[in-house]
Length: 146
Image (tube, rainbow, N blue to C red; front, side, top):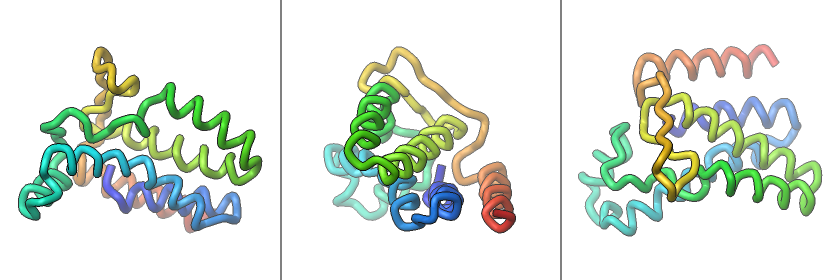
């Protein structure tokens, strides 16, 4: 999913929990592992290649959704976050989990057990498409209603 879709989900969680900034950061932070891929593959040094990579649903390197998208890592980190940060941990976990759900819905490669690539989950929402815009609008309406 694109950044705006993750942000609106974080805003919904923030509205429910009363902590917008933490919820939004938690909903976009898992994509930090994209930067590891961009640096490792030299994409970050070439603006044209970087733009093509971030606007395309294909992952030519097979590692853009790395450890922060791994379900096992998420579960273990969630336990630690909740034990250490209590209520704030729940907000972080909700944002992170929402991010994972959105990424599971989109049609890009998603290996929930990364770096093990034996299971690839591809959703039905095409990246940066009318479908995703509709999903964004639905989430926006939910945000307004809350």
